Image (cartoon, rainbow, N blue to C red):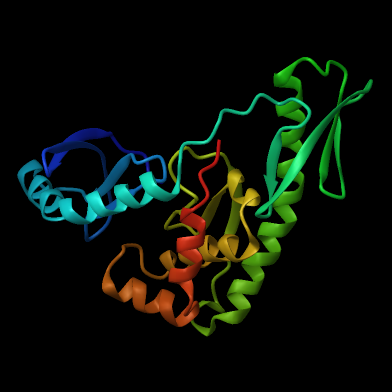
Length: 241
């Protein structure tokens, strides 16, 4: 995501007022995203007036309301993680039970349907969270690289694309890209199924060709990944902490 100054605009529909976090960037069209936590963000072309953006947002009020109802119905807010034995954690779309063990050195190992965390202080949630974070990062890097190469190989239109992959936590996005060719993937993506990971990667790779969400972009995405809508719908069901 490009550096920008975030502002807020309100959209009204059916007596409900929704705050939209607005950023500006180098693009041709306004894009609107309703996130799984029911927050809404928009990215507008630099130079558009506030009145133009407000009008466009209001025209999409019905769509925004429908998306929010979808998430409110199918994606209840998750319980905040406490990092204690017996708690459920996700990896590649599957649920695993956490087991916490005392050990002189921090490490994490998977065994069957369990994720075993070894830490010097089992009662310290921050130590367990840090160990799990490092473990997720170590597994995410090769998987994201492999899936990126699979996506490129499967799409003729992207054969010449050579992206640099970066991994970090993002609050609102599964992925982003820059015009310089860097694709950033949310670490939390490693908790979703591989077909969802591939969807996000393919989405960002297509943005390296077409930087906005114009009809041309979605035509390219459809050619590269015909079932992207089904993959996106599955991804939308994951609300992560």
